[in-house]
Image (cartoon, rainbow, N blue to C red; front, side):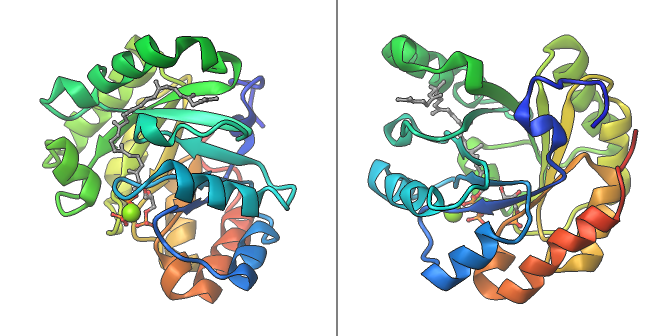
Length: 240
Ligand SMILES: CC(C)=CCC/C(C)=C/CC/C(C)=C/CC/C(C)=C/CC/C(C)=C/CC/C(C)=C/CC/C(C)=C/COP(=O)(O)OP(=O)(O)O
Ligand SMILES: O=P(O)(O)OC[C@@H](O)CO
Ligand SMILES: [Mg+2]
């Protein structure tokens, strides 16, 4: 671990599996994911996330020791009992409700229940126009490398967000652009997610970002998903 954010559990995460409460995963597959050696399980999705499907998934993951965090995408599914909470702010949208609006509404409503010491903001930079998150939030996805790095620096240096998330959900991204985002940052951690379908792409992402998030492939090719864990660990520390 480097000397940034040692008090944050995610400061040491190199590999994370993202599980979508909306999607079915049988017990054997969940067992393999939770026992894979991945640093954490992130529970989250853009649509179809409910209190019930989030509680169900959390209870199943809770049988294992792997840290389990919730990415809160709707206040209705803010379920207690996770190890950590991430609150997304979509930075590259013109719609203020996805930057601060919904978050402020949720805080006004639930302030007394929010475990602030285990809650952190994620500054999302959404880069795949076809992803559900891009459509929902009307993200301005056509950023060049300079613009993407500017968002990363804005989040990291000006807003001091602990996590910036380069989000290509559903498609493998431009690793030079992602690497430029990371190089623009000096404090927080860059998460990368999108289109990692096996160890080769996982290594490329691990060389560009601090934390590699693997999602959809879990549901279509579990073996390929599992192989990303070792690949990321063997890729070394990433950019220091
Ligand atoms: C009671 C208790 C203990 C509660 C603790 C919970 C807690 C800490 C609450 C805090 C309150 C708070 C501030 C809540 C914020 C609520 C809120 C509505 C925030 C808005 C978040 C936001 C910008 C959502 C937009 C969508 C988004 C960015 C989702 C992130 C996850 C994501 C992109 C998943 C991608 O998956 P998916 O789209 O499913 O992938 P596919 O395209 O492949 O399907
Ligand atoms: O599902 P994939 O494309 O792996 O993306 C992972 C994650 O970044 C989604 O929020
Ligand atoms: Mg989904």
